[in-house]
Length: 436
Image (tube, rainbow, N blue to C red):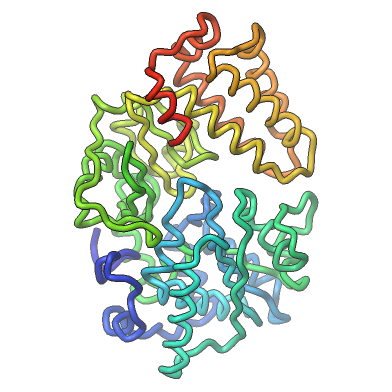
């Protein structure tokens, strides 16, 4: 990777980068006209890092055109309700000024009258860093030209969905909209609203300084640039790394032991050594998080982490999560645990989510406990097909996508649980799957 990227600068373990150090390292934000910056973002090919992967420049243009000078809102999405993701809270806590730069640029580009920082209620370190960063800017007479406020997002999976974020800011209810208008049309306070992920705005702050061509220098496959990812290795704390898009899963596994270039999230403490991850010791990889997909270690090891390429193969980059499942962990137990979590996180707005995900989770729970009913496997497959594309939001689709990938990836072990009521793993391994 060439030049400064999102996690360049002081070691993450050193804490938040100060405004003085940030300006000394990167220089001030350059003056950029509204149209110029949006054009640059479109040329960069930057995709949103919240999970959906929507082109950032296109999103900004839609909001700017809708607002047409009559006012808008920028909502900085740092809810990060995905349990396996720790990257956004880390960026907020360690590189707060990159995020604030990006928010300021966004407000200028779409003609916003307000910036709302929507940060997960569990992410106290991120909030404290942002508050200090704001005070530093005021002291340096480099404050914002529009009002900025912080809103704490409920600690629920669906809270980070963009319409849920808008709904919460407006009405204190973090459930997704079930009908139009979408946030870019009418969002916070009825104004066109740009909902943009924390990491996306950090990339914007760098693109504004160095340009689209610089951003595109990184990237080995179809998608240009870099991404901040959360890596979960068996038995270790999450590691936060910035990768060049197109790096393989195997390359990322090899780097997990190099903790000098990695860091635990701000709520944890650095470890002396990260656990080594090898192909021989790994049975599967969950890509994209709980809305993502399982792949066997053999299939995943040489797979480039590229959003476009993964999508073509029915996999997902999502919010940049690479979770390794050890050979010592029962995958049926691990999958059942995720299914239970997703059922409990329902927005309670429609039958497919409330009843469908609950029925699936209950059946997977019985399969994991070796208490399967005769029709459980067939029922899970049938219910997953019935739930798909029928929810009021995308929550049930993401949940059953993960589940269907597990049914394929772990077919042999699932058959053993269902037909023979036997598990290949020890009681200790089964407990590890429940706690993972």
